[in-house]
Amino acid sequence: MAAEGRVFVTYSVILLMLLVQRCSFNLVVNIKAKDGDVVQKEFRADPEKDYVTIDFMTHGSRYITVYIDFRLKRKVFQVVVLGEIDKAESSYEAMCFVTGLEEEEFISSDSMSKLRQKNPSTVRIPEDDLGSEYHEMGHVVVLNSENVTDDKIYGLCKDAGKVLFSGTNPKLLLRENSTREDLDKLELASHDQSGLIKVLKRCKETSELSAECVCRTEVCISWYPCQMKLCQGQDDNGQPTEYRCGIKTCGKCHLFDFYVTERKQCFWDVNT
Image (cartoon, rainbow, N blue to C red; front, side):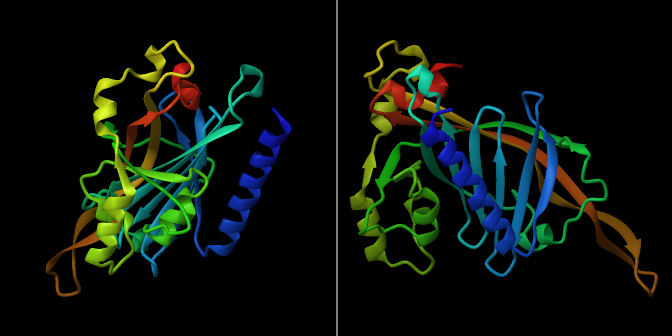
């Protein structure tokens, strides 16, 4: 690995350690990924600010953070793919995607903060495999000093230099209590690339390095707590009641398609 690549990896590890130290809760889980590899995923929850993050590194040299914002009902996917200099690839490519958060898609941040595991070395597999969800990320906002997006999104996406979203709900990029003026500014700052996605070839189907194409990035959350399990019981007066007695776990992959100006910006998709 090139020197700049090693520096980047070291920086990422140090940053992750600092984040863990500052957080009151973290749960590290061994998970069997879709390709059969065992991956460690770290879940962190902040009930006060009402968010959960999932951090992990795949064996394909991808660093991924999924930020689940319950308050603003959105998910932010930060993806960094390391390249190989001897293959004429860039040292890394960073991407940032924002999608909506569905009701009851994950357990709450408060419930997540209370999870513990009896056997930390156990390799987990989900009870329910939800398959893959496709996202056409046809809109882009370039981040700059006059940025109109939320500070949290700016912090997560600044390495990528831009944030990609579907365009169906641009409010997902704005801070809480944003105004109509904020939304107008965001719409002016965003660029619609959905037409290009519909007509261009996938990068893996394009032979020219300098050609425009549609890049695909896959993010698999192979295991996560998706629902609370309820059991039947009786209260002190003998009346029937329900109580929480565990969690249901799910697995889901996300496929993000987006426009790139050159095929070499999507080296991982070309090599698949």
